[in-house]
Every structure is written in C-alpha cells, then in structure tokens.
Image (cartoon, one colour):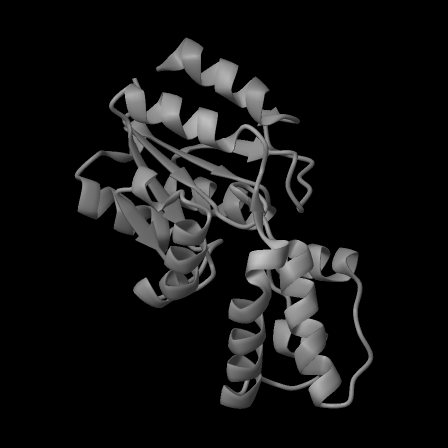
Length: 210
C-alpha cells in the first residue's frame, strides 16, 4: 500500500499558467521584448533541458532584476489568475483521510509554493512543501523525491509522484518511484503508463489502491 503521495504544483494542483505568462510578459515588456503566448510558456516550462532565460528574456541567466520584477508582479496579481483545479480539494481530503502523507515537490521556490498554497487554502493538506531552493537540482533530478523520502521516512516503494510534465515523469523514473500523469495540466507525455484526464478519475483510482 502506498503511504506517501507527492504532488507537483503548477498544472497539477493549481491552474497558474496564465498568471505565470502575465508576469513573464511584464518582465519582457520592461526590458523591451514583445509578449509570449500562454502556450509558449506552458511548452517550455515543462520540457527538460530548455534554456529558459534565453527563451523568456533572451539572456544567458535570470538576473536579480528579472527575478524581482517577476516576483513583484506575480505576488500582486496571482489572486486574480491562480485557482485550484476542480476536484482537487475532494481528492486531497480523501487522501488525507486514508492516513497517507501528502507532500508537494515543485520547481518553484518553496516561498512561492507556500504562499500560493496558503492563498488557495490548500497548504494544511501537506506535511512537506519542497521547492527548488531546498535541493541541489530541480526536477527531472530525483533530488526532491529523495528529500521527501528522507524527511518522511517512507520508502521509495511506498511513494507515488503525481505531475503534469515529462520533468515529473523523469524525476519519478530517476528516483524509481511510481508515477501518475495528470493529463489535465500543461505538459504532454507519450510514455507515461498511468494517466488520467480528469481529477475525479484519479480520485476513483486511489480509492481502489489505498
């Protein structure tokens, strides 16, 4: 029986791509670049081995100026654009009722993640919220999953990762844990063996295996 369920955040728990796109475009506008589409952002943030500073801001790395412009805009506007996916609360309530330990592993920083999950009244479901600043390497590295395994003391064979991108899929593969692909999110996968188009379908699946 699985005891630890780890969720990706953006595109899995929260619909936030429009907010992310607006904030990226705010930075682009400030530095004199034209806007990108939501579809452009969704594709590149979910594909591994992408040079995101170059894709988003035509620079070799994210500068402190980029990061602060993005942070200020995102924090100011997420209340208008970020929302939980329909059925997420019911799923989390059920999983919590089974005694499973729930965690979040996101390539965002833990500061952003905690703020967003608290705003969406979701943070109390999770025992651990792991961001990119808490480990050496982001997903698709297994670092976040291995970190959760360490702090929960729940072994890999009793752990599942739920996510919406190949970065999540590869992270699960690299960590050797079970993976479920959230097909309602932003990414695509041609290889994920277990996938669900809707949250209530995943909910039903968990009622059979927990």
